[in-house]
Amino acid sequence: MALVEIDKAYKRYGAVEVLKGISLDIEEHQVVCLIGPSGCGKSTLLRCINCLEPIQGGEIRLHGDRVTGPGVDLDLLRREIGIVFQSYNLFPHMSVIENITLGPVKVLGTPRKAAEDKGMALLERVGLAAKAREYPDRLSGGQQQRVAIVRALMMDPALLLLDEITSALDPELVSEVLDIVRDLATKGMTMVLATHEMGFAREVADKVCFLQEGLVYEEGPPSRIFGNPQGERTRAFLKRIIDAGRL
Image (cartoon, rainbow, N blue to C red; front, top):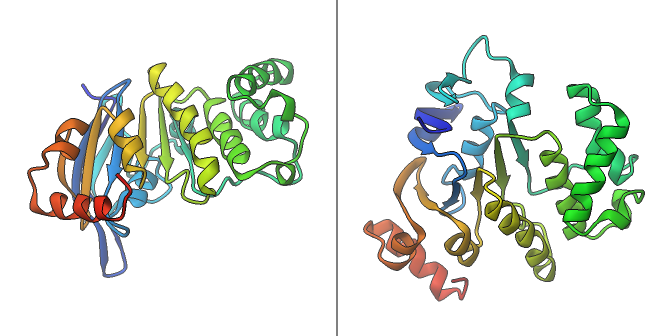
């Protein structure tokens, strides 16, 4: 059984269908990269997995249990599934250590000292222990995004969703955030990334899914998707990426 099973999920906004019966399995310890043109449904799919957006059809299961539809404990679900967005969404009036310990203390009931010890260990791991008492506006964009990733990891999620986490960063700051994702991948964290960083997807993914018009048009290992794509639309998309010098 896959960790996450997405079975014919539909999502629409008014008359606009964004997800059109999408199906995808995510195995434990797998890194899945979602690629495709803007508007293809990558970010919407991540938000639906975390139930930030309800689906109108189909089903999403975690550990074999349905996590969409009525009767789902959303607080429990979001302990299991962490999400990091393009914008960092840190509380500006809280220090770094306060930002990352808020969830464990308030939601999980973790003693503050234990939460701070864990938080400091994770900040050390991402090279930000010295910034623990700083406020977000004193950090660079790359540092703030690393804090946002740590905040998600503080809840010990079974699955981490990353939504274009480098798109708001200056180019020189992208690598410091991607290094954290590489480290998480080597340690077995299950992750789904929506990304425009094609070289990174080719390097770190176990599976790459090319989304087109709300469906998984093609999926497979990065060696095949980037080296020998079978679908005409996949080939056309990657040609544009290569012509733009992004792969």
